[in-house]
Length: 447
Ligand SMILES: O=P(O)(O)OC[C@H]1O[C@H](O)[C@H](O)[C@@H](O)[C@@H]1O
Image 1 (cartoon, rainbow, N blue to C red):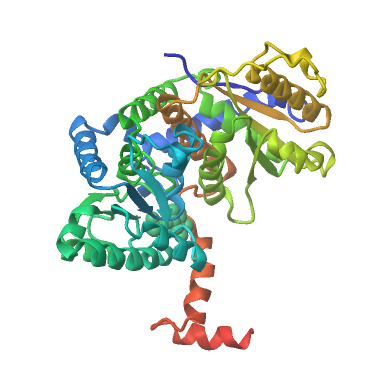
Image 2 (image 1 turned 90 degrees about the horizontal axis):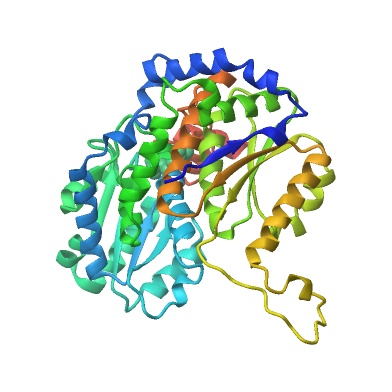
């Protein structure tokens, strides 16, 4: 098996290699703080050795539960938001057929999502589409109290019970939540659902390799063993004993922090492989919630290329020079498509005939990198040999480890997210939630 790799050569210019490598001692200190568990947020370090500590029995339990849902359901709705949703969606979108819902000879249930928004039309249309279908629910919430998924579950649970009866519904609902706390724990225990636990010391955005991600990913028919194996290999490759120069996560963390200090306030994660769109969404939560605090932090953005070169390309090339780009480059696509010859050649594309579509894409990628670097956008490149579960597992752990190191280098607690509560407090006050009387009164004065 190959490994994902990192190349910072084209990021050098705004910062020098010496500047990045001068961060070696600091990075090593941050790695030691993570491994010794003596830094800020040290009660949320469960992700650090998570891949290597997942047991065969745990994977089998998840696979068996997935198989029950797979045998009973055409559609499984994964209910969750943030870290309880993005990792699953990233893997399923990357590995499923791009036109999955149109495939007639299906081997796997369709995985749909709910509770990741409060869109009334979204919920209406979801409930409509589920009518007459055999469906199941995986309700995922670390805290067990998040409004969006709770609201969606309330509706979908009722619909499922009305369709198949309360008893059968119990066999089609799985809850993934805290071991003891939260409304979802109480509900699951009372109803007698099969449950999986999200460890206390694993925060939502680091939870993709717990049952939070593993169960719905297994339901989609994707090998969770390969995903975990990939993560295990990167856990080893970024371990405390690995020298700085060989530790991808440390180099990435040091480079992005040096770029930040040089005035590059926005990092754009780019892909040239449309199926990686949600890897970008997952990454944005990981870095946004981990670093955006205390008035600091790189703003994580993402683009799909070449698609967005026709919309955001102008800004990236010539807008304010406060950005750098991190490109996820896929070495080898899964399929081969050759550009055909056309006798009339009215589109003038015969010069491409006989080439693979990926040859064109790769030259677009290289041309973009050179243009952006020329335009003052430093470029970090992460290469994935191919898009499969193993390399996605590597990518997840690579980014998680780098995020922990990077947050400590920045001087923040990378494992909390106090700012997320502000909107919730206002929303509850505006909705007159019991217990929010004072806040309701105060907020009305601002309207
Ligand atoms: O899994 P839950 O507890 O429902 O949380 C879901 C998400 O929402 C919260 O507000 C946090 O900001 C996220 O870090 C979390 O992933």
